[in-house]
Image 1 (tube, helix red, strand yellow):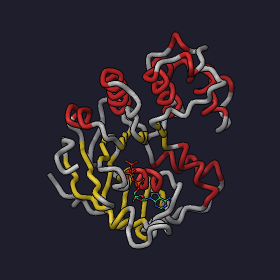
Image 2 (cartoon, rainbow, N blue to C red):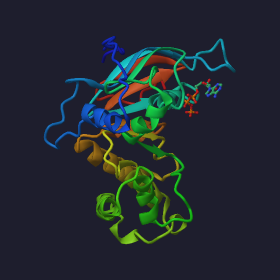
Image 3 (cartoon, rainbow, N blue to C red):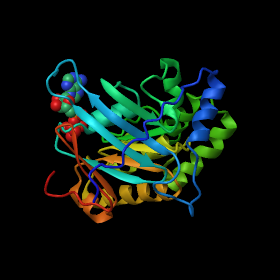
Image 4 (cartoon, protein in one colour):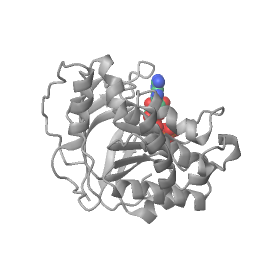
Length: 276
Ligand SMILES: Nc1ncnc2c1ncn2[C@@H]1O[C@H](COP(=O)(O)OP(=O)(O)OP(=O)(O)O)[C@@H](O)[C@H]1O
């Protein structure tokens, strides 16, 4: 076990000032898709770097939501982020998607410095991060196909790309026969599969899941975790915030424990543990 001692590189990288096309290609170049048989851990550039990150919300000035967090996540890793309610997991995720900024410290996603990133670049960052939530967040008046297609439409993909990629990703998540169903015609597990399909249809190198099995029974949860593991094997880096003890203990992946904003454990092939 290591206690979060990886140490960030402390690099100072420029966000660059190029136009939107260049911004997209820079991000996708720096967040490469890996081959199934070539999933290095701890090699090359980290996908995520937290370098002495502290986040203090104005409403709680004396109690940092995250306190001096330093860690690195490498391409192809599969990580559980665990901790009691209020320990800082959602804050960690919101920092990664640049929903919020740290009070101090540096955050990099691939080579991009999120702390100095201009607002206009944030949508390009988010194209490289798929997000899955506990409550699925599907559009109720769109079909399964349309929900997934919408994620491509909003980033300007052509009809040809949509017609090819949407059925392909729905096959991958096991929903090829539900294309024309509406969310309320699906089980919870199926709805979560749609939301995973939507998150990965643009092939982001990083997938972040906030309590993906929180609303699901144990058997359905296992199916969702199998799917996330399969996605990880294609090279996608997966970060999962969860309270699902059984899942964490069964899967034995890297476990990062937060306790009242502190990183208290960073364990290879970890368990949920009695400190959570
Ligand atoms: N917008 C906010 N304003 C003020 N304090 C906040 C805000 N969001 C979160 N906090 C506080 O920051 C701390 C960390 O909260 P956070 O939501 O990150 O925890 P969490 O581990 O995700 O909890 P849960 O498991 O319940 O989702 C808590 O003390 C919380 O009350």
